[in-house]
Length: 548
Ligand code: 1PR
Image 1: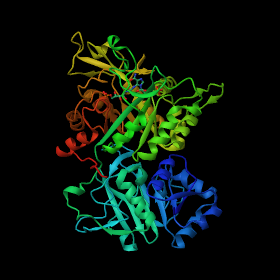
Image 2 (image 1 turned 120 degrees about the horizontal axis):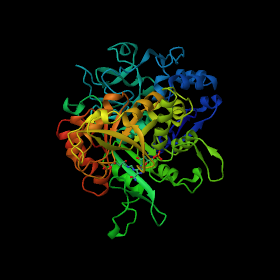
Image 3 (image 1 turned 45 degrees about the vertical axis):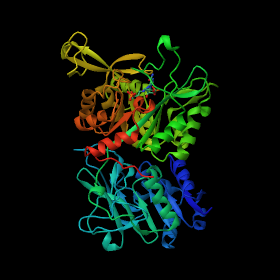
Image 4 (image 1 turned 30 degrees about the vertical axis):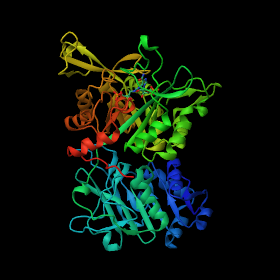
């Protein structure tokens, strides 16, 4: 098999990139020192995390000159995500740090006034703009396809500026900001999105670069309806995983977090299937992301042998969309008594193919302590240490709230909302209580307090469950979602209660949620992910179209 050289300098999930490269027929050889660069024919710089961190890693290890030489020699070069950012002159993220300066532009942070930042999800990379419609694809990019982005900084698109210098530019639009999604010139190709996480569309791009197919006729001329720009509505499939009473790892699903069958039905843990097979099934149905929540955290085995690692490794071989893993991410003591940090646990997950980790109970404790210190950062919490190492986009906070009804707002010190679903005694107000340990322990702490604290600590996204709604098939808790969205800038994934495609439409119309997640309705086979996305598409909401 032909080889491609991959620069081994980054933190984060490079396993998925290796899997994607292998999937399109190439093998990976690692560049481990600058001396390896000259022997590379095709070179890829992957990257996640901070611009400054990436550049200083490259600088300190002595990679900058060999990379310049590789590019100057006209050999194929590809940069992905922070790998494209390195090609620019610099970034607002670390203004004092210099980029490679290959592209004469600078990166800016997205404006968060009217949208969530980071920009997470599926967006275009379109070379047809304004009157200039082209029927040629750039390295397999198609105007109707969507690609997975995750970043807070981007190069704003300035019409004609780079084109005058010989660059071909593909753009995406986020809110009213148009930015560079991909660029190419001569032997250089770079993407702000992650091709290895962009399903069939991304694999096509990777293959075109590796095959050296810079341009190709599009299968069909782009139509305006097929090239709707902007971030799509993300639909996520969630798999709650735990060991059943026989010791097998199974996908399960609770009602209000109770995953056992009713007394008369044997009281066993509900077994809905095998995690790896089900993740693959949802990927093939068009899920935009797959989330695994390890709901019992497997306390009795060494962390390094956690079965979840193997599940991720196997899933990332066939599932080329982002994978999130949650459960048990906190500072722990291993079975042999050694201390193991949350960062070390997260690192194992990232190395095994996870793109994001999700933190539940530990985030509540850390947020309580944050306020106890007078809203000051500790610097060493799991959230802070993982986001410092891998970027805040890699840290999701999974929130497990439960409604507490009160007769009036002054009946509690917590932030309340007026609800259209009154409580059992006609209470018109409620607050959302944070729980830990899978809902088993309620805290004197509300969701507003939690989400604002974790945002300050560096979390990149909120997975917003709702115990009252979980497994109910009655639709999402729109009041909760609106309340959380009003409090923070980071993206929110609405979760709990989805029972039919219309519930996804409702949550996207009635709230400004960034994504919506379903579990039971998919596991029970009542609806497929594809049906949900078709429903949304038919009703005029932008979704990533199904591609094979
Ligand atoms: O606290 O960091 O170890 O993480 C534990 C994780 O496990 C948390 O993310 C917590 O939400 C999750 N968890 C713990 N116990 C349960 C349980 O069900 N007994 N599951 C649990 C949470 C809820 C959702 C579910 C949606 C959608 N699962 O993820 O998928 O409610 O369901 P639906 O569409 O069927 O309504 P830590």
